[in-house]
Image 1 (spheres, rainbow, N blue to C red):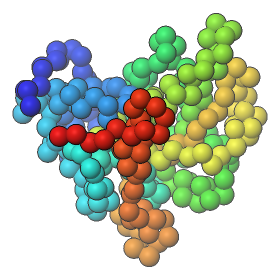
Image 2: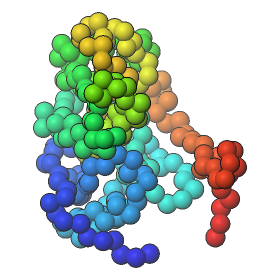
Image 3: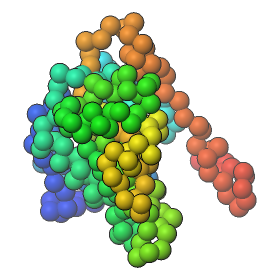
Image 4: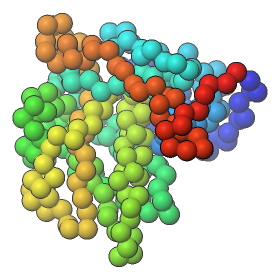
Length: 262
């Protein structure tokens, strides 16, 4: 494999944060970019001020959280270790600088025509807005999400110059992936939820008609204190599985898989 191509220091930026990931995660430089899993070469070129290059062993999954998944091909540990727990520590609040760090990562996602259709409604550290967002979640999600210090509603701007933007939902998803990965680098976790009421969100927060609430998000630190018999901890420890890659990619015609070649 060819050595990674260096990138200018001005192209990347990290923020200081009091986190549980350790000095390695705080010191590494990461390049905000949605769908990083498609650009492993970019990740390998990210510079570490101390070591020179961001290597996979700079980020290690804490085994107290969750085991690494069984992967078919080598990917960056940052991607493999990203997961969506339900056991959040309500006693560990979110520093406001960390909140804006996550939003900064989200806003640097790519979008069609650079339209940047993402908007966010935020509830931070159990403030009034946190309770308002919580009330829009399904009862099952409320039961565990109430412990996360940050709740978000991701909202899509539906039109571009009075023309429907058919890529808006995709682009909001790209911004959320940025936020998700950034949270992972600092020892936090994000759990995206479809189980909420967009109608309630629109009514409670007076969302204009040209915007659509599409996803709820809980963000926080993992709660290690819960007993292993806790129902959410049990779900957190379930094996993570994915559809095989050769069932996802076709060539020449639909449902014609690409065969693995040496």
